[in-house]
Length: 304
Image 1 (cartoon, rainbow, N blue to C red):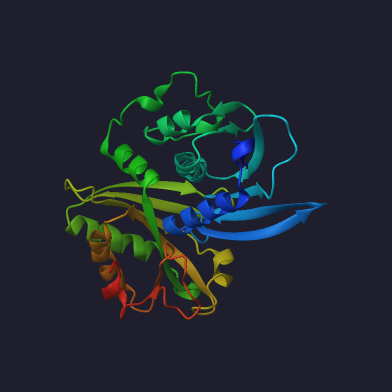
Image 2: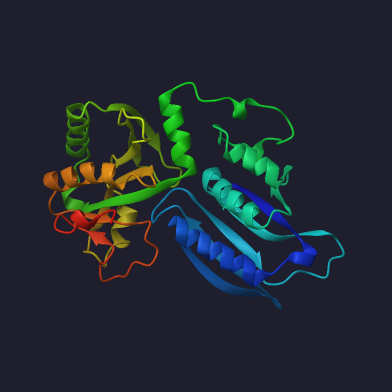
């Protein structure tokens, strides 16, 4: 289980309709993958939001939004609850946007510290997003130090403003080594700088390789390639509307506005694997007819 926390809202200004309209607009704008349910506990209604950065992401949380405030005489009341925070990054981005819209209030970080709008902004604009929810915002720490290397700069820039694309393949054709070799050959051919890493997701046993790419220019041209080392059996049922037995083989995380740079490697990908698919996870209003699914014949429209 991850951390949890509350947003303490100023009682006399709380409006559940405005709050939910804000959340849904934010999630659609950012391309997050989410579901909203209106539920009832006893005589009280509340909204249940399940949200992740993209379909199948390890970065997710659950948000409960009270339908109406209680009859509390307190100035602030804990009306928005974050449960099982699997990604402090995702929650930090949501809180940053929330306090731009609703500057009054506080975030209670796992019943440890209270974070104000000013605290959240300072962390958001820093280069240290690690475990911030467990740190006292009143104490000075290293989060205000600038990054020492390009890889750190890339990582935290992507944390703040990124877009995801998923690449899908028939499970029986999954070949991690073949894909990785193709990618590294491409990066070397383009003389791009890349940094290889390896990490494990918290919710399943499959290791992923991560190649952080610096395109060696001065217009923020960089991205991350997340490659699955084993096929994800859990994902095969998620994309049945494309074709049965489809699984995720790679995810690209990149800066908004860099579609032209990403298009270069995407087009190369379809030269290597012409029968695969690219799922545009940052288009919320996709349909199951496949209008947000790219193939080798439709990728020319990517980014337009």
